Amino acid sequence: MLALTDRSESDLAMHALAQFCIDGEPVAAQRFRRGHIQRSYVAETGTHRYLLQRLNDQVFPELEALSHNVAVVTDHLAGKGLADTAARPVRSLGGGLLWWQDPGNAGAGVWRCLHFVDETESHDLCDSPERAFAAARAFGEFQQALADLDPGLLQPTLPDFFDPIVRHRQLETARAQASSARLDQAQSALGFVDGNTALIQTWEQLVDSGSMPDRVLHGDTKLNNVLFRRESVEAVCVVDLDTCMSGWSGYDIGDLVRFTAASAPEDERDLSKVFTDLDLYRSLVAGYLTGARFLTKSEVQAVPLSSQIVTMTIGMRFLADFLNGDQYFAIDREGQNLDRARVQFRLVESMQERVQDLCDPLPASVRAAARELIAL
Image 1 (cartoon, rainbow, N blue to C red):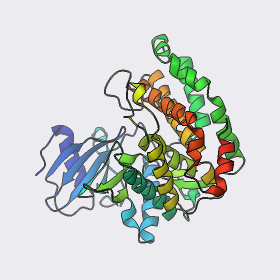
Image 2 (cartoon, rainbow, N blue to C red):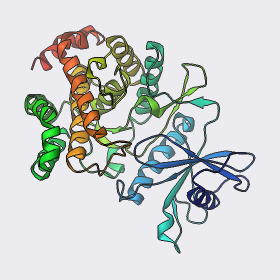
Image 3 (cartoon, rainbow, N blue to C red):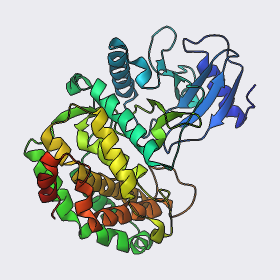
Image 4 (tube, helix red, strand yellow):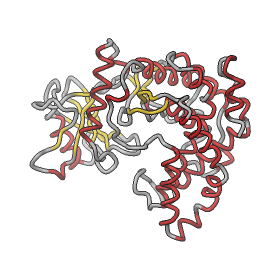
């Protein structure tokens, strides 16, 4: 039996679990610490285990839209016999929704339930090119399975989430409103952004040209959103579908590169340890292109640029949150979001230093165009 921790909310988790279509009666819950946004618990009934999450309705205020998107995506996968491609949600009793809230106690939070995938593990750091390839292929195959799903069926739960132009504008607003103390600490990071606006402009031109069609994205393709068979490099499924929305394919491969090919943790303070591992990068690109066979020629040639722009965009989000007083991303210490931003910007610098090498894993037919695209 799992031991109870954080008892008051664990009790809430077990109560919430009983409101879903589960097998058996809830007997225990234990805090499961992963991710920046949701609070998660592993709960069991004696015969089955489930993942309970208390949703952050400050980050995701449109809970009905979020659940709608997850339902559309998972139903589409199930209809193709691919339900196990992603973690499977459990519907609530009565209404059949993918979330539940106690109508008599709003303070108890909003909860959702998923089947727990046993005998698996996740990884925050990539330990081999083989694991990188497997993770990238899993995300690519996930996108491939959704390639025939109309992006217009999904609702924008986080408007402009993938847009670097909007993220840059939000950063400028945060800069204008930040305290002088935080501005002083962020001076070098802000200087990096100011010196790389051409990267944002190039991406904007690419999108405006129509070269990046709307796709159904996972939207959070970190390595730790793939579950692997325990003590193996076999990818079992992808998890965390909260950001499944319409967007550009370049976002998914770019986010995968910026997280998985990083040589150090996301909040590393010693920037001398931070660079983009080109061996992992090559494996990621190879795995992704193996899985995502629907990509157009222009989408493939944009992979190196996508890797840079997404990394920079995430950095701008971390930096804006730091300037805003750390309101979005959970932190364990002061300055953590600024450290996260600095790591992202150092990764972009690392890619810029080896910019030609980023094109090597691409098919020969698009390498010249990719080199021209990233010759900033």
